[in-house]
Length: 361
Image 1 (cartoon, rainbow, N blue to C red):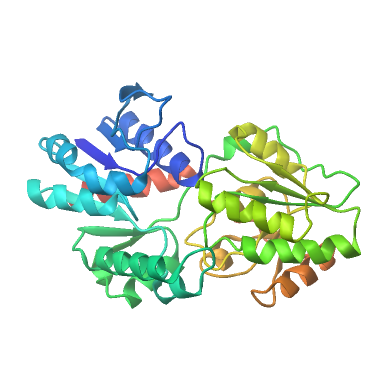
Image 2 (tube, rainbow, N blue to C red):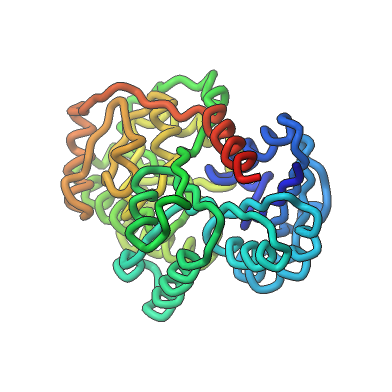
């Protein structure tokens, strides 16, 4: 079977979604399928190459918006002889769906999150952009993809609430490669250190974390925040660094970016806890990875977080800086709640995707 996978980003870019789809694509190749990935282009990357048996083709646009606008001609050509197409929300989904309908191909979309009215409550985005993104999300939800994959029950419920037929929804948890965590031991320093790592997404609660950190630093000046974030998108990074200066956090935190995957896991394992004050989560790789490393987490409990969080954890009583500050104080005192560990093996995810794809044909 020939499978065309259309993504905003792929290996060697680092991120939970990138790792998920790299594992899925390489796993499908091991099962005897031919897999082609079509994605965005970075200057250091080849436009056409093979990675562990997966054919990777890149459109010469670094912007995901440019990818949405200009990828269709190439997609129509690549989809001629494929049997099925896979894509994800948001920017890759529309051109992938158009190409699939043009060529009469089956198409599956993994819908990472459904924000709906949450768009209008999120920070770091102007009203016009919020309306634009909300309308685009509603458009995608109305498109008749053959199947919608929800990476959590929370996302599945949101898909249903926004009009997707239940018969077209498949619930498949995202998977992680637990072998990657071997060799990393939770060994925090004497100085209380809490960590945020992940994307600069507008829903990630950095506008809540930084003022909470400012208050926490005044009470516990010896504590440290380890902030591991990318420098892209540049506009978002500029806003975050501006907030760091506004709250006088430079002496309190260590700001790092462009770390390797192994270096990120090592840094997380050296923290006393990981903070996840998200407005919403469709799955949350950061929480699952922290739990796998044995690192306690402080979470907002929004979206899928109640489904994936386990081990030692604290739940914020509200989505405010004060609530996060209170949780950090509890964490420093060691007042953790604890539940049995949950695991999400990549092998299970791969098998469920394989059955879904093969069952469609």
